[in-house]
Image (cartoon, rainbow, N blue to C red; front, side):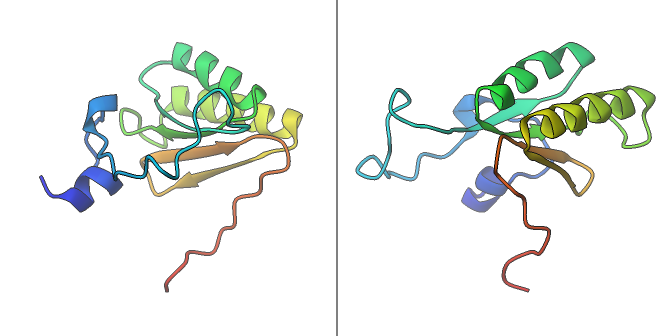
Length: 118
């Protein structure tokens, strides 16, 4: 598997150890002093939404892998509705990227729908 597919994904489920460290230690902010984090999540079942909601309420951005569900799946509809409600409650944003990811943001973070580098 190449570096780019590890970074950007190839549709497979990822674990923490699957991410490539890009040796940015001199730039990194430690977890304790960061005001916001980007969190990675997998949605395999409805109960996975609880941790995502908590993270967004805590002020983090969540990128959730939804490859286990079809976008037409009734469970996915309920999950999406719950996460839309959270985004609305905190004044954040939510967008579905392709068929495999949801991005949910906290208060005052907007997701621009235009892609960079056309």
